[in-house]
Image (cartoon, rainbow, N blue to C red; front, side, top):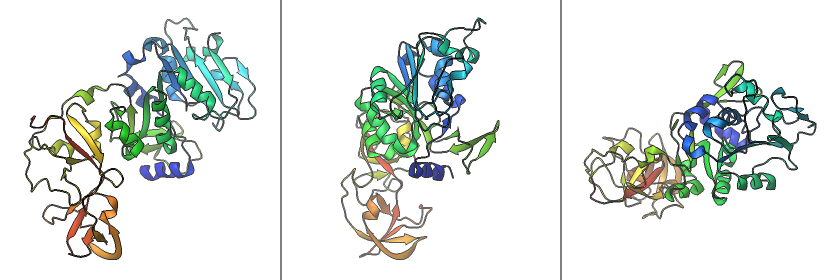
Amino acid sequence: MATKLMDKAKKEKADEFYTQLSDIENEMRYYKEQFKGKIIFCNCDDPYESNFFKYFALNFNHLGLKKLIATCYDSSPVAFTQLSLFNCGKSIPNKNRRAYKIEITEVSDFNADGAVDLSDVRYLLQNKDNTLTLLNGDGDFRSHECVELLKQSDIVVTNPPFSLFREYVVQIIENGKDFILIGNTNALTYKEIFKLFKENKIRTGNTNFNVGMYFFVPDDYLKFHKIVDGKKMVRVSTSCWFTSLPVKKHNEYLTCYKRYSPEEYPQYENYDAINIDKYTEIPYDYDGCMGVPITFLDKYNPEQFEIVALGIVGSIDFSSEKRMEILKDGKGTGTFTINAKGTLYKKYNPQVDKKPPAFKDAETGELYSSIYARIIIRRRNPNEN
């Protein structure tokens, strides 16, 4: 259901998934040193709704931030209201659903209780050094105004629109900025994102990979998983963190304990590589190309392995072009394809394959198993155990 909801969001551009503060706190605690003295840009974040803005406002001094910038798009559910941030008394008319930006350069202990907390954040705009300004455009991250703010920033931190993730990341990279973002694990297979993994310009974050997250959604969402404090929540099992900043686990060497055997690690029929079903089962004594699940990228250490290609058509050159009948539940359908629909495949082995064969050679009748998305890797240092 979660994947269907995200697919629906892509099709309908309904990208209003609001991140829990707890998920933000769990990930951000690893980057304190990188945040010090930096300008943070949350360019998909209405301060009325965004826990990203709340997190950085509350921790502005603790993290030693130089500035916090947040922009709101004009279709935000609250963008049409009177802009009186947290009831601080400073407001500007906004009857035409105008986008706006908030720039924070100082967070003080306004209530003099000895700590900066949410009650102080409500009064942020009472400080003359903090500003709220209407934008001329719609607040889209691709607009000239938002791109200019991006150029002033050091690190972008947000949950960008699921439907525009590729374009969003490419823009950040082109402007030479660092980022910490929430995205779909399926983005690992986007050619634009996969290229960045190969170039070591992006990596998975510290938390929540292959676990999923719960997001708040607007009240008019009909499909949701639970209600917490009167708010609807959707669990997206395919969500995770992506970042350009250093992550400790990506410097750790993966321990390989299994010995290679051709029976346990069959060769693909259309590419010179062996198939590996779990990244934990990478053999320690095989130096050729290996196809591993995309979950490998969460443990990927570029010092230990080299990413060769993504195992789909357009990323690699297949070594054969067989005409094959597509099977359903192991039975013929009368529909034919070339090269297993452009993916990797191997000979069907009824002794070990749990699923029925997916394809049959139109000439020989040989049966083949379909392989889910694989990443082709090889060791950086052959013969290193």
